[in-house]
Length: 426
Image (tube, rainbow, N blue to C red; front, top):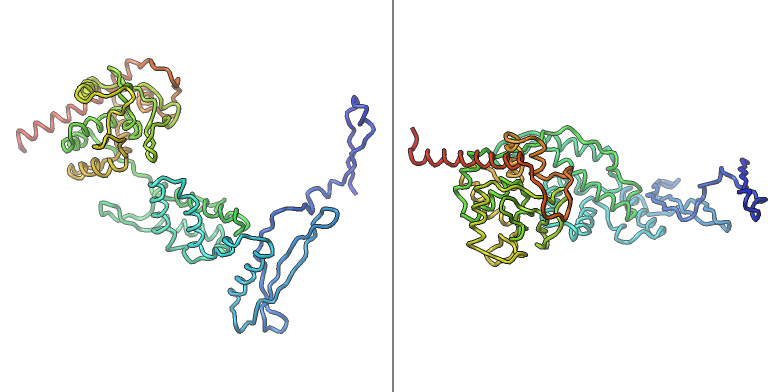
């Protein structure tokens, strides 16, 4: 037997003569209370007429160690049940023996696991996330995994599913047929599969998560469209005065929709916006910005600043009140505004517009007129350190110039558009 002897601290007379004596080869063996997850196995009896199931139980010995005992149960006649039915019956018996929850024993197929997973997560998801998860399941996972036994799914099985999806053909909203999917979709597939099987492990349905070592297959490059100044000017023609002002703040200042709809009267300065809070899209209450770096002063181009000040004089409000609200005076829901205003005007103008496209366009075209640091200052990415809570923050002159030049580019596009409308096509 391998022994380990270690001396206690000599300064401690009370324990100086004590010796630590234990067998290191036995450390970790036969520990009680370890979780045991198994499905057992089924074989025919010697006579070949009945199905017999085998599995193990772990009993605690008087000395505290565990002893593994094999158990067997006759499950039924071979003429009356198939092997799959016998395996299901054995799984039920094992569940009762090992005190597996009844809900877990009832989950057999991937469809049943997905329902439990969705119900567990839906309360914590936003409506948009619920719709995304439902769409991913119905369109991509359900046709391939719906009736599959959860306990039979392996990493190789799921990898084949991802590989198949990555080369599948699909139709884009504009009617174009393409082969392959985006990286974003593959990430969503892995995320939801991991979450579902993580819950299965927690419920002791499967012994381990088969998604842990999934590899992301090849995918199509993610499309990141932008709006040209000419297209943006055409889009503005189909908006009201208020909506035009609101959208220009998003586009020219690079604000997120939650930050734009969360602007209060006290956040507007003569030449800048103080972005320090955003509007939660679920509760429609003000909260902290996305990152500490998002809390910053954002320069207002001169013409846009004048138009915003004119709007504030025409529609005054208290310092803590929101500048932009719906017809009932309540905070605006970004998803409703996107569908009812932006998509509608974009369709009339013949251009695809979204909050993400406008913010991406702002970063793209600001690079023409400023340094990368100026663009980061306006976009307020997470790597920009901003002192939270400081009201007055310096804005570099080059940053102001970049914002002003971007505004001038849009105004030039608007003037060209108006001249073309007046003169008519040549």
